Image 1 (cartoon, rainbow, N blue to C red):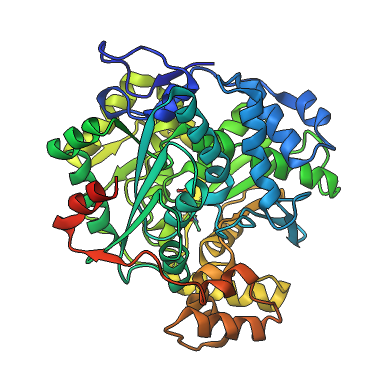
Image 2: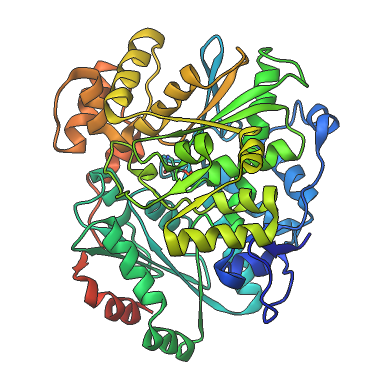
Length: 490
Ligand SMILES: *Cc1c(COP(=O)(O)O)cnc(C)c1O
């Protein structure tokens, strides 16, 4: 299967590329992104055939259906990374929290957030491709907290790939910062910057457009790639767990094959939700996809009114920071799928130039045939965490909690909904401790102990160990010094 561009082709690039090309250099014509030329048809027969498959077997079958230009042995090694999750036989547990509400826990990997679901296998694939081509790659990442640790962890000591990761000093949780600054490998560089996440991101953009920087990379025979969720190498792995969750509901006798369900996705850059959308297009019986947001509710507005409007918006810092996003990159792939390349290019140009686009009534109808949306503010998130623990005995993180609002408000029929839990409670512990006990802990370690005592849940060993690990990445610089640091590193 080949990959084509969401904004059409400019004539100077190949009009379609292989999977490996799309993931090694993910930027395409007119600033667009790559999408599969077509989607495989899986359907009910596929679901029946995989009713008893374990996660890796199902994953291999989904990847096979895409016909990727990756050696089967490399795919097998990539999927073996799921053996490092808490329970290798069940890397992605699906927990029944209420009669009609299931939670798929996507956070049982090494960095305790859903980013591991895709980045763990992606690291093996990218590094193998680079080795096969005898090329060196640099991955630059700016993180607000979860992408950084997961990117570093997957590329640690992998051949032919280096990672430089920028984070806002003081802008992440203690656990997230420790996950980065204690990573000890010669191919990893972690750089704290004075400023917030927007500063880190704009510093990264400046670096990517710097001529001296690009010239220096060429001198060093180093190619740039990206590990963010516009890279289809991540999306490909984010379709599998939607199909797996559905099969789990069948196995738990909550539905029979063919019954419809709601998927309920806490969304930021829309990679997780896009995986659900593709799964639905491939034949998964889905009634609708619920898009859950926090107070940065651009997606709620888009899905309700057809308007994507950034004119009077500034990012609001919330208790679910991984969703503090206004420009949600993967929405573009849905626009392309529904309205085609020419319209996508038009809409994205309007967003760039006027900071707003509007769908027609007909376009909005087709969007609403698939999606519905709601958002929860921090006070509501706090209440959902507290009440769900009190009433259902279930402990969840603030991103997951936004889904409980949409579960209550967005379903037209009482079909079961699958909520995707994107982080373990350990990653956002001060918010959760506050929700459970009302206390305000400044440091994660105090909050972790308090939650552990209140909920009678042990702190996972890999989180506890972080606090004793030596800090080996201690670079903290001003924005203008980043280029020098990165060049010195490579
Ligand atoms: C990245 C992330 C999200 C958002 O996922 P998208 O695929 O970008 O929509 C939600 N919650 C957590 C904890 C995350 O790390």
